[in-house]
Length: 267
Image (cartoon, rainbow, N blue to C red):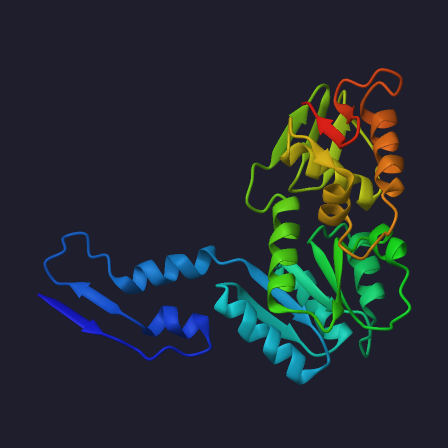
């Protein structure tokens, strides 16, 4: 015998999971119910912390992300957001650049100083004078300019989560180098290597796309973002740095040039 209760769909994805389609099979010897399935699914949802003082925009982003089956926690000022980032340990942060109490730049810098490696996407208003290189250097993984579309924001969030290793193995290797994606640590011959955030993101992108011809534009857009650098020479400069640290700069074996195209990474 089955008992079914169907709830109306709301904008709150969490409520949908907990209320909708409760199903219990009284003859089921395992005793597993739809409540158990819903709870397990909730536990598996990735958590995003949204820090923005614009109530309307913050609520809109929350609904948007919940519809994409993310668990969302919000903060209305920089200080509150920073403290929640420390205690909740979310999978990703969306941080407005201009915040009362503590700016988005300050949040990025302080979290990285505390060795918190949670991926961060900075939200900036159109016309804000931001040093995009500086944001990446202090630890931001990407940025989005307001106003932004739903598809762009979701695509950037998923791309950053992929780069952070949230949906992949925790440790990747090539040659004599080991990359710990969970701790964002790189070791070569058991010695920890120092890299900038941009170098780290580029290396992980190569690791996730082995033995593929990658154009400079694709690398630029995937690692830095669509509007970060108008000149693809920045890709060449960072590949040179990776070769110097993890390859033979004169006769590279891992970071290969594909003439007329871009690069190919061979583990």
